[in-house]
Image 1 (cartoon, rainbow, N blue to C red):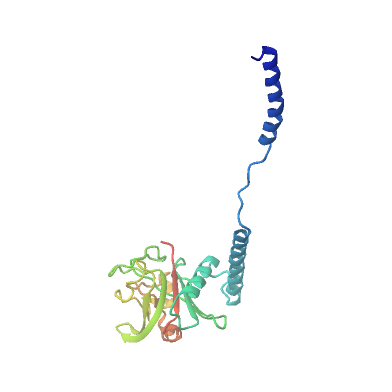
Image 2 (image 1 turned 90 degrees about the vertical axis):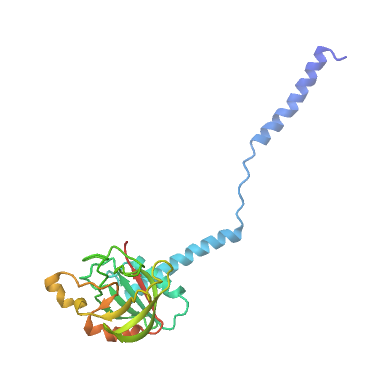
Length: 235
């Protein structure tokens, strides 16, 4: 049987061995989370690509003469819609900026192939969307409000508003009732900017983007047959 002295010496020897070992274990740094180098590179690549695209969009905004006249974020969103919309058969992009009042030009037609602004003009909004500003939008039949989102231009016809252009809305629940609502582009006397001098704003439609009558046919013939329209607004 071990004496008390022998037991104490044994315990002291064990402690002398264990303490340095535990200290070394505690001093090791926590293991880092390893992110694969390929994932890190992809994140940097995506960020650089997005930044590069944004810079390219801003250069194009300047080249078409809309810098300071159209919000860069609205322009970038319109370009993104143009680039990703299926079934596009025309290099024409039309941007309607309903965040601007109706007494300012807010209908822009751009030739993307030649990077040229073809038209910048006035456009009316729906009578139930607001007075000077459009701030309420709808996809509902008989709402008499304008719709936002992406459209593809269709065929022309002559109806009660004269020469007109049918539109197909591509955003479900936002503008896909455009045909059913008879949302078309047409000319209208109430969209003539000469009215601004005594009214301070354009007249309003039943939801259609109505153009000055002297420009309507030219614009319609330019954008008909499969071009993209992007309508922006602040609801």
